[in-house]
Amino acid sequence: MTPALSHTGRLLVATPLLTDPNFARSVVLLLDHDAQGALGVVLNRPTPIEVGSVLDGWADLAGRPPVVFQGGPVALDSALAVAVVPGEPGQAEPLGWRRVHGAIGLVDLEAPPEVLAGELGALRVFAGYSGWSPGQLENEVAEGAWHLVDAEPGDISCPEPERLWRSVLRRQRGPLAILATYPDDPTLN
Image 1 (cartoon, rainbow, N blue to C red):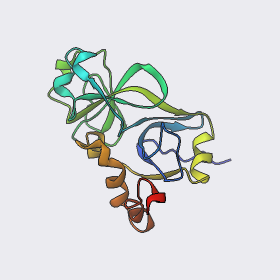
Image 2: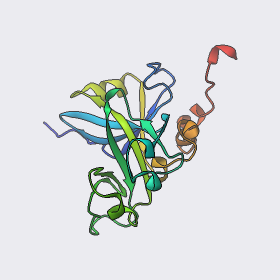
Image 3: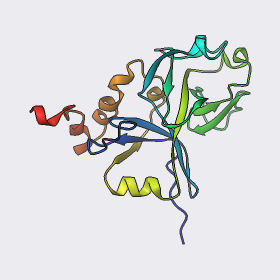
Image 4: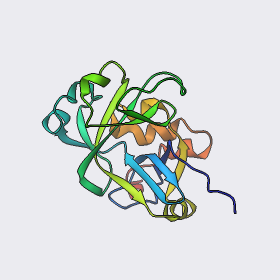
């Protein structure tokens, strides 16, 4: 048996067929994907809650908009943070940051923010996460619910998260780029 291909660090882009309100038109960054399942955060679901109102010291490091994002429907009472650290893999990683893929990594919110202040290029805080049991994500992709595409570091801190779904699709080649023009409600055409 060959090991499953890991999609850690890639994006899941919801197809128009995915109508679950938690994931419709969502862009999910996969933080972990292996034989035990997958875990990610939705990059384009900002909440009205300011980072500074729930996490002391982290507001100045948060990208724009400086709000908490809903990472998914699981464990909404927990927070995790993702940040970009410029530089090549192989260099010493900053204390309180763990590389996920490329320049993208997880931030330890228990670490003092001032330790990471000069290291982070972009930071996003999420309440909750998205999770899939073993084989569930692969089945959803095979059924046409998701497109798997490469992430870019700027996706983490997109200043206009409501445009991220279209933006990610637009930069793809072929038929995926055309999906960026798909209307919000196709019945109105």
